[in-house]
Image 1 (cartoon, rainbow, N blue to C red):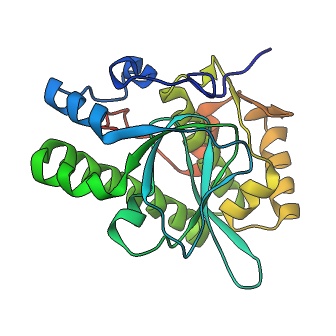
Image 2 (spheres, rainbow, N blue to C red; image 1 turned 90 degrees about the horizontal axis):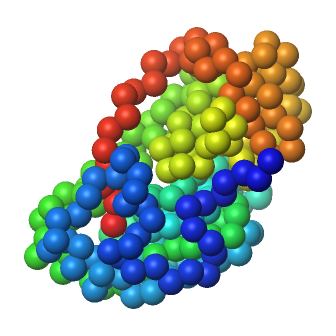
Length: 253
């Protein structure tokens, strides 16, 4: 079965008024003035291949990006090479806002799949704040959403059991993929491997493998290759100790 990895083919040049993300109900529409500004704000597209480092920790970049297609992950590394994955980026997510506010990035971003990124010039962000307060609020909202996701991930690493951590993360990623049309019924293509999960959950690879096997044995999901099938969503919720929030419309740039 062919699985979805993104809403458009890599390499396609997409006008803002024909953005494929607009067809998903999770995204709040632009008004006409905002659409005109974003059309001018967008300077092009970047097509990183799988494994490309989009941002490097302790460096700066003149660009911000909106994910149009594909998956990426944000992470930090220690001097001894240990890696902590902070979260994952899917279509509609903004990358690089930190570089617009500080002198350098404090985390790295790597492409998990081939991607299409809408490119925006960092130097024009101030114009957005000056002339389009609605879009400026949207940027603030996106930053707050990112903080909320990180809050949950910190709670998982600090307080949830290994099984609850894994259950929460799988629910979270499945729900986000569904919002942007990346699921097919109960199935979704997850482009990451168990090491990525281990580095997100703060567990060893062996512990992560055993935890996933235990959850799978309870028939909460089936995971073959890169295709994840949700079998018992309520069971995963109970394991995570989580009530999934109602879906809400969110902005994007």
